Length: 399
Image (tube, rainbow, N blue to C red; front, side, top):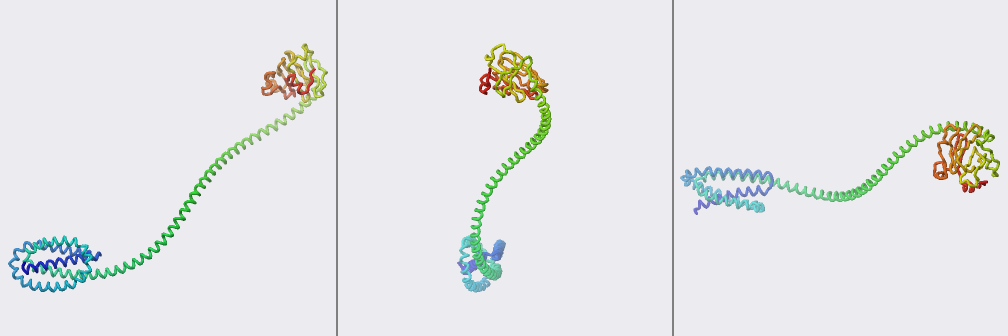
């Protein structure tokens, strides 16, 4: 390989190294400004590649001018030597970018492959060296701008590191506050849990209270209904009481009349067609008028016991079917009897309730509503059907 070709190759590698250094510095900074610069550099490289493509058509014409460019190339080599010296002074700076270069090694490998391909193309670009020199000048200017930008980036990085330190200090303080907040949150969580437990108990108690209140409301409604019914009943009772008082007044008047009648009847009591009998020793049992018996009274199994007012007369043995007419004062009662029954068939009372009471027999007297009695309230007459055993049990002596 000729010295010129070797120098060209060295220049190409230096250009590539410069471009890679710029790219590595931009990538190492990791900041937006460096990223934009790297993007610009990449764009310039793209433009350069486009320019290289466009100069391929002119390479054939520049072949003849290559000899004249050798002198210029010599001076350029001297300049490149100086540039090499300057680049050596950048080694210290480039050392700081080694970590970043490690990240970009994969990209460099790809670039190397590209440069290897480009090397073949550069062999054909011998005549384009002046243009490359011009491009190198531009690259130097771009490198200077990049270095200035790098300085700005380093200053920005320093400020960012300072800010990061302050941020770490603030973060430490924040972490301390966060720890205290976590403790407070744990205490608050415990308190919240206790509050939830108490709230659950309160809700259960509230539910019980609601159920009790519902029951009380139902009970109150029932009480109101009962009170309403009682009020209605009271009104009815008052009305009934008023009617009863009126009836009592009427009854008192009737009683006065009845007492007068009873006083008169005590002197004029009689049974139709019957002669009064004078036997009877019990002072509470008055003699009763009786007809002359056809049969022996001892054969009777049933007896009619008559009470007028407060006076009870001697039992009448029931020996045959017949009628008795009881007259006392202005009151008249007709009684039908058989050997085992009694019945009020007619009366001078107004309502004839005594007639409606029906017949009393030995068979039904223990089960009928009035028992063994027929009562005429208005005439103050009570009839009772008795057996011999009942009378004897009550101490009434039968003849």
